[in-house]
Image 1 (cartoon, helix red, strand yellow):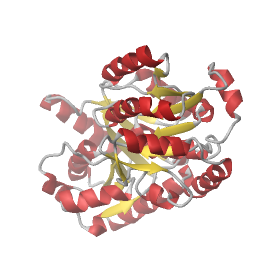
Image 2: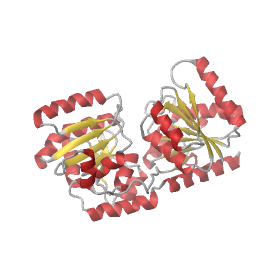
Image 3: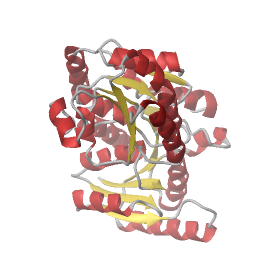
Image 4: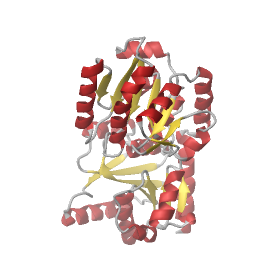
Length: 370
């Protein structure tokens, strides 16, 4: 199949990017074309091109008010669709979906849209069910948003969970990983990995706020935050103040291609979505949280099925210092047997292959209808 993945954001680091990377891995036997927005991280794009030599990448300008550039790039994409005999457009997120709708009008090629978050900035919400005939969500919690806020019908929405490379994200010796990263063997490391955006970055601020209470329960704890984004400077300022009071207990680092080593060096991880899945596959305790209002809490063998359904973005607990501390302390005492049980579930249900099989089934069904 000839597939165009339409990505209207700059290609940087985030959940949508890693979701697309999983698609690229799973669709290697197909002809895949990727469009990304101007302003992408060129080094990361270079790595993607090196990893997938058959991949064709086109840069477009879908953001900013430049109607003439929009028209130019829409026609470029329409030409690519026709000359490359594209069978399906996989639009990642809302803006890409609007572009895909326009391209379908021009080329008659069908499209599907993948929703990665709640689209809280969307206006004219009731318009989208008329534009998007089929939409994929990465967590069942997003179905509720589509039904209640946007007015989508049940038959328009499908669930495809994130998938990871289960042969890559595996458990390794913790002391060996700490030694490789220059971490003291006795340090209890809490690891938080996230894009530090206005929503997800607020989680890092909440974690830092809870740290004094965590330290009162376990004085050996240290926090490492790996992430980049608009809230980074605010997070760094708050971390600096706490470091002045308690010693160097917080480190903030840029995104790295060596996350597996960091997962394995950690004593527990705070995150959601793909970070939670990858960490659990490495047999690590995870406290799942995506925003600064409510959170899923500690992932256990009893709630792993629900965690997968909601992409580890739940609302069981209100975010405050007491609740966060309680879940972190519980995570630090989770047994290795419990972690192994959860990892086995992840390997059985969250592989890239299982994710891409679901995608391909939807692609084939939708193209057959056209």
